[in-house]
Image 1 (tube, rainbow, N blue to C red):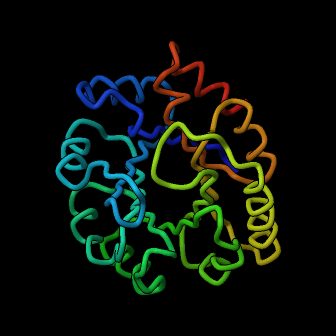
Image 2: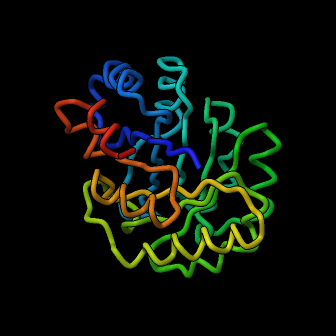
Length: 215
């Protein structure tokens, strides 16, 4: 499957976000990854709907919205109408998974589900045919700049094997500690949508960093 790079603006210079989005577009990354944290589901607070609206006005790039919030079904409408192209929510977050997937699709958006490192990957098998993407977190969600958890690789391999055995074409996204080296490993495991924040935005040449993630 095609390798897609999703640049997490959690690591961008938020005081100069328009310039950072232009830099991201020029780098060759396909997606902008937009992390939403509520301070409840994860122990951090980021940005939300007003910032997403501004990002949507500033770029035509695909907006990959990752909701790390409790009861995400309560906010699907607002995020869909504010410019998200894909909305990914956590199976552990307290919303009915099937109903939330249907709600996302009702707004014409792509739907994704995510699992934390401690959640068995088998928990998402029954939803694999209903979503566009499954995000396997490769760090504990909540903060950027963490180290990659090697044990998550087995989950990626198991999920890709399951999808292949059932004839399910599915994007597998990874998020956390992704750089040139870990990108190579997770691509071999079966992931094809690679989220990177610190590695890309701290790179002196973002385009070269994106290229290294693909190679």
